[in-house]
Amino acid sequence: MKNYKFVDPQVTRREMVEVLTKGLGRRLTKPEIDTIHWLGDCEYKTREVLLDLFKELANKKDVQ
Image (cartoon, rainbow, N blue to C red; front, side, top):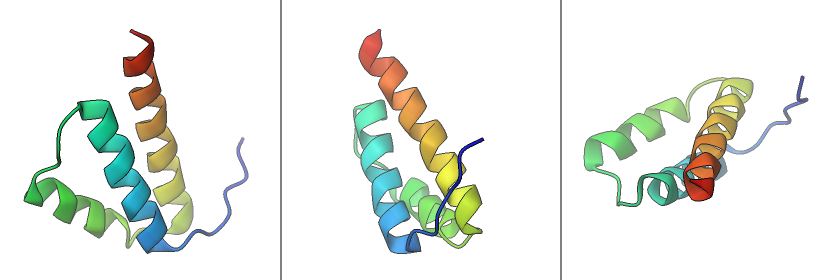
């Protein structure tokens, strides 16, 4: 199990947007960005788990 450390919510939000933009191959819509902003208010471990999942999906897309 990964040991997650606290990261400022703004940093995590920015990373989520970057990873999702890359993985989806498009800009995010306003509702999608608003949802990421909302997710930034979650507990830090939850944010980091979600970010890791987004990164894994984006990397799988790159491999295919």
